[in-house]
Amino acid sequence: MPALVDTVIYIIACVIIWLTSVIPIKCLAWAGRQMGRLAWHIDRRHRLVATRNIVAAFPELDPDDCLNLAKENFHRLGETYACILKTGGMNDEQIKQVLTIEGYERIEEVLTNNPKARIILAIGHYGNFELFSWISLGAPSAQIATTYRALRENKLNKLLLELRAASGCLYFERRTEGAQLKETMKRPHIMLGLLADQNAGEGGLWLPVFGRETSVSPAPAVFAQRYQCRLFPSACFRISAGRWKIELGEEIPVRENGQRRSTEAITRDIIEAQEKTIRRDPANWFWVHNRWKPRQAKNR
Image 1 (cartoon, helix red, strand yellow):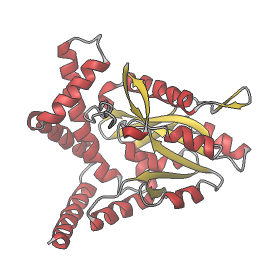
Image 2 (cartoon, rainbow, N blue to C red):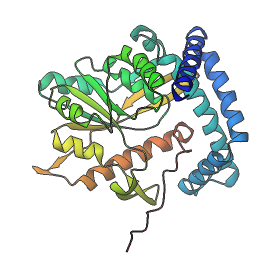
Image 3 (spheres, rainbow, N blue to C red):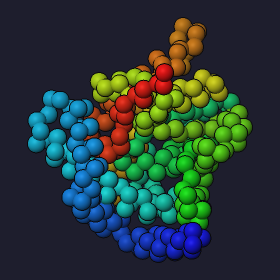
């Protein structure tokens, strides 16, 4: 029975992906917003999570503004996920029609001047974050890589990896392919994108995000130090229906006065950069994630 279910899900996914490939992206964006509107009304749990997070993060806003921002966030998420199905199957020329990349000439300059240079990107769930697999279009000398968590359905997982292959990005399953990632990080001109805006559980650093302590992943800072990488934040912004812009932020130093900075200090800088990004367009972020989970009590 599990194999049959896996096959049925795979067939449905193939049909959906084919349909999105023939529908104009602006139409998909509109349809996605309507799905987000529907989700707002029927998904009470995530509606409450998003609203509470926004109220806590922006105490200066009145309740109606927070509610409207949460609604728009649902619309944006629907739009994003509908469009991801299409952009996942695009080639580089098609991607150039919907994506603008700004600031990555600085990455290209770093790689040109240093043949051994490696880059860590601290990224997050902003806009169409799947488009980060194409950022080598802005820095042709880089080999982009990232991590992912495999789906339980093997055929569906394989399908998604096949879609992503067009970008040339290297994908490493974070739970099972750590050794392969470590070997890859020894190569020059690797540009590794790591999500830095999710709750990292008990293994994370407990630091304030929008004024509330939560678990933060130290991975970007740890990788930058371990493999002697330059570290930059980066974000994807929605600029119109079916159009996005990826911007490179200011470099975050991993050394100061000739000494290694602490992992916590680097991570605090990443948090600050991401907060500024979110404040620019709050509806662009993934507020439905339970980012501020409480610390678990230790067994005595």
